[in-house]
Image (cartoon, rainbow, N blue to C red):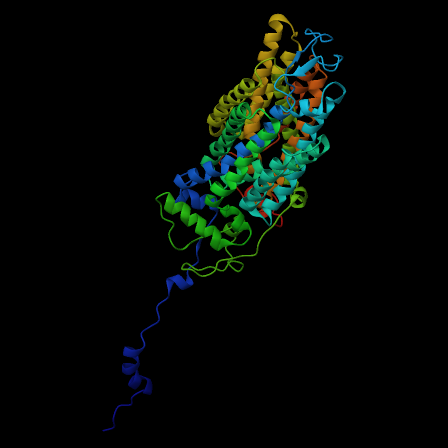
Length: 537
């Protein structure tokens, strides 16, 4: 009887089986990460506006008060103080010192109260006061574009905010030691250059970590800090009556902000993301979640708009437990904004609206300042008067939408400006005209508040600050033009303000609504999300 044949593989199967078990798939190795946009991650895991965002928002928005100090200090430093007669040759009924004999009168408060008294900027030299204001806003216009680009590219939001605050502190203090008018003019230009980047850097840095449903109200709330800054400045100016000491007192807070506040402010996770530094972006997102009492689970990774729309992971390397996560840095500039038909049209509209809004806002503000009242109290009341407009606009923003609010507030302002142009300047008509001016600035203050958040939502992260900088430059051009309109006097300025308000409202009609829309990261992501032609990022 022959023995049964045995396969060699059967002989070793019993030995091999206990030693080598069948390989099981490793889910962590083969599964792909759950890629989310920042807005989605904030809504699902981190919280849209918790304790972390509140603390970061308040600390960052304090920079708006600094911008108010450097922008409005000129009201007090370049004020035209009162004067009094000393003897014969002086007519107490005269409206100005022009034509009075030298030595027959003196300035109330001494010669060092303002630049006007120290350098004799009266009569034929009075135009130099307006020139200082125009030069300052020209510096703001250049600085807004410069730091708007730098904050989108190399310096980042926090880096740019740090630089402009350093420059503000330096130039502001140096202004106090100006030996003559032309040095003063130069230093005000340099202060304007640095100050032009404060607001836009602080605004974007404060609102980018906020979730989409809370971003509108948060963005609108930043302007409270600007108005509060103006109110505080009126108190500082009341204490420091010398223009030189006032410039130092209004510049020291910028230094304190650098030392006390900046170390506790985080860079924007959106900027980290578009620069390819996903590790840093994820670290901030985990901090947000932990501070808000929430948990960001493993296996979740940030991605750009295009990456969430594309299932391919070839350009994204990742790990759930500490490995490097990166992609190629994406940059953008105004060239990219102009190249895309969608963003080019939006930029044209936002530039026009910012220009017309600024002409009305600063123009009406100058008329209010010229009232024959206590200067310090007047500035304080003007700052307080803007706050109800901010509140009403913030309440209605997420209920009505950005576009209807932009149209409505500008048409409201333009309508009352047109009405004011038909009213006289005496008796009851003068009071009614002043009321029309108050309602006009009330509406335009709401528009000004709205424009920052609206403009920020119209453009993706890679070019957001560049676009905001361009819009801010247009606003500074309007601020430069406004004093020349006011000088014309009569009802003509109100006609110009009314035309600008109505024109701005008509331009806003062609802008898209951004309420509850995602805050896009790249040009391509925005084009894809808006259903248009996909462009290169």
